[in-house]
Amino acid sequence: MKKLTLDIPDSLDLDTHDMAMIIASRLYEQGKLSLGQAAELANLSKRAFAELLGKYNVSVFNYPASDIASDIANA
Image 1 (cartoon, one colour):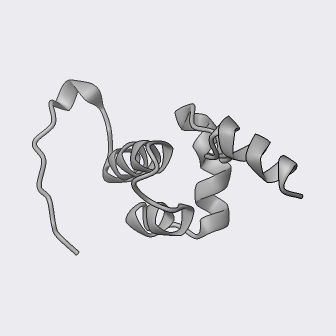
Image 2: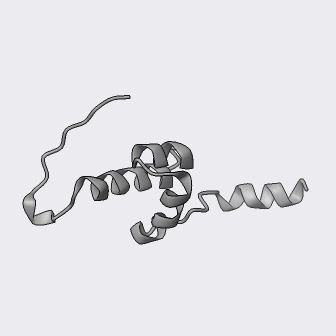
């Protein structure tokens, strides 16, 4: 795993956990990380990460509507 160092303004008042959640939740939302990978990045269990996604305005259901329709048609 790569390590990244960021300098963020003190005025943002974000701790390490908040930054990890913001990054992990956005990468999950974009489909770049699975739920498990994003949880690992945020140093949380899958369940804890999924429960916190709403706080960051990200749905735990990261599934395109077109795929849902296709799955229903093929059921």
